[in-house]
Image (cartoon, rainbow, N blue to C red):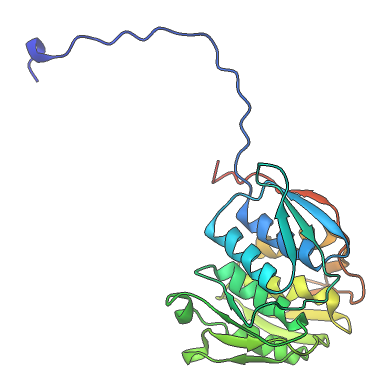
Length: 253
């Protein structure tokens, strides 16, 4: 643009330093683990900074349909979660996990604790995401899980029996570590101790399994690594209600 056609400069006048308080959005990974632990816990928990998202909303809706009472606390993103002490009594026969892989994998495991069977289903894309390895591991631990979709994908039916416990082998060298996290989060309510072993002592995204174990311990469960390729969870030591603040998500911030 010729210099003669440039617009007149716009003056910018400083108004002094900014003063504000900003709360970054909470981590969805932490929020969904904390929502599930609080739901299974004994007593009422306050889970703070649960940033609205498809993942966190799908998890909360699924837990409500599994019989957990949850209500907003105040005007923010804090939620009161009335724990069921490991005894899920579904109020719906179908759980819609939407497009949330975290919800599908975590609630598949949690629903093995339900008093009656439920069907977990989601979007068309979710029906293309395999879940058979998780179902097989849960069956090894004594649960009743039936994959209803094609090629080992959702929908699936689970619940109506208890998670017995024992040992299971899971291959997460190339698949999501959420399979492991889902089993571990439900494991404190098995009838016997649970040892989850990993093929080749390899776990993709191992830090997310560490995150799961940290949340479990924060809510009072006994869960620990046994060597490089196995995690042990003590049965009969369930979650206890607490106030839990979901840490900010650096990426979201």
